[in-house]
Length: 315
Image (tube, rainbow, N blue to C red; front, side):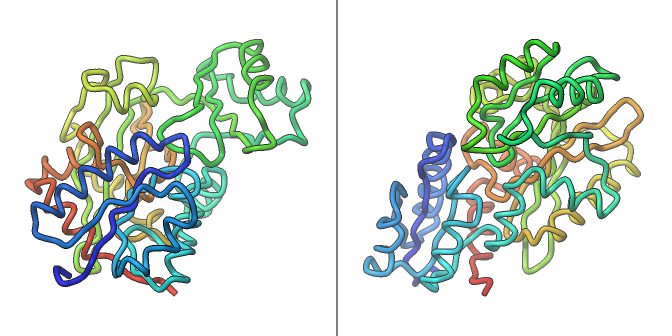
C-alpha cells in the first residue's frame, strides 16, 4: 500500500463540510506520519473526482461526511473509475444515510428503534401532524424532528409542544428532504464504533455521551467541553454483549464495511433503541471513534492505517 498514491477525500458540499475538512486534515497528517504517498483533496465538484485518475490516484480514503459524500454517490463514481476506496459500498452507504430505511431494516431484524412517522411534502397537513404528535408524545411529552438523510444532528430538533412542532415544520423545505417525526426516548445516549480488521469486525468500547445541551446536537458533538465522555460506558456484561451483537447485526444487514458507528439510547429498562448508523464517522479531535479506539489502546494513526487497509472495490 505504501507504493500506491492515496487521495484523502474530504470537504464536499453538504452541511457537514467543515467537520469533513477537519477529519480529512487529521487523516492526511496521519498518513504522512506513517510514510504513505498521499494528497488531500477538497471535493467541491464532480470534476475533482473525475480528475483523480489523471493525478495517478490508486486508492481513495473517504471522510466525506453527509449528503453526496456519505450516501453512495461518491462511492458510485469511484466504482466507475475503478479506484478502491475506504468505507461502505454504494448500497451500504445509501441505506445507512437513509434513517427511515435503516429503521425498517432494523425492525425486520427485531432491533428496537424509537417509533416514528415520515413527514413528506405530500403529508404535512395540520391533522396529520397533530395525530402524529398525539401518538408519539404520550410517554415523554416530546418528539424529535430530523432529516431523513442528513448527519451530525444537523437540522435536528427536540420539540416539546404541538405548536412548536407545527412552527418548525413550517420553516423546513420538504421538497429538499423528507423528515422523521420520532418519539423522544429518555435514557443514556451511547455510541458503538466498529472497525474491520482482516475481514473481521472489531467492536470498540462503548462510549456514553452526556451533552451539556438538551441532547447530543451538532454543537455538542464538535465543540470541546460541551459533552462529558464516559469511556468505557458502565454496563453489565450481558447488556454490553447484547449491544455489541445488535451493532454487528445491523452493520452487516445494511451492507456496511470498513468502519462505522452505531448510535443508541438505552432506556430505564436497559432496552437499547437504535437511532442511526454512520458509515463514515468523524475523525476530528473531538470525534467518538478515535476516542473509543484510544480506550482500546489503539492510537489515532493506527486507526487510520487499519481503515486504509480495508480499501476495496465492491462491484
